[in-house]
Amino acid sequence: MHSDAETVDAYLASLPDDRREALTAVRAVILQHLPVGIVESMNWGMISYEVPLAIYPDTYNGQPLSFAGLASQKNHMAVYLSAIYGSPTLRETFEDRYRATGKRMDMGKSCVRFKRLDDLPLDVIGWAVGACTAAKFMAMHDEAASLRASNKSRAAKK
Image 1 (cartoon, one colour):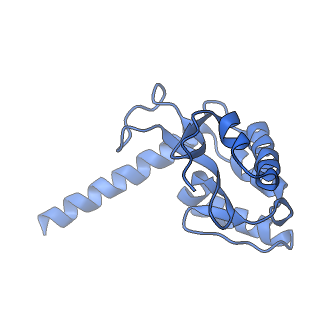
Image 2 (spheres, rainbow, N blue to C red):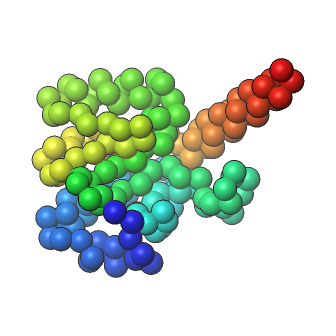
Image 3 (cartoon, rainbow, N blue to C red):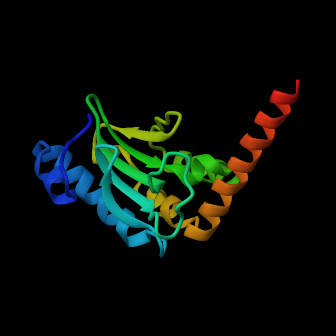
């Protein structure tokens, strides 16, 4: 669910106790593994981990480049891990590590959903957050943007 909270503390304070405790624990793992150059903020109605515009200003939407996110949704909580979705190798390794824990993996197009903290392998989440540097993430984004532009150009010529 989208939140209008302006700070991470206000966002967490607005949650029911069980979700606050779960997201606080996941947040601690994310912060422990967060690459240099990525900052925590509130954006998109959730806790967001981003490459600041001062470092990477050329985004398609004028917003900071989203590296990860943490949210309480209506029927679940979610961790958004952009780097593993931008790299087939990182995604495959993430999925293998996740499955090896024996926990049920509930992945969406851009997130890992969970209902309780015990459903989430925190060590695997920490690995995923730390597996990609800010520079590598920006390069992945540049490569994807270049591919999209190339595909648009080819389509326009047809």
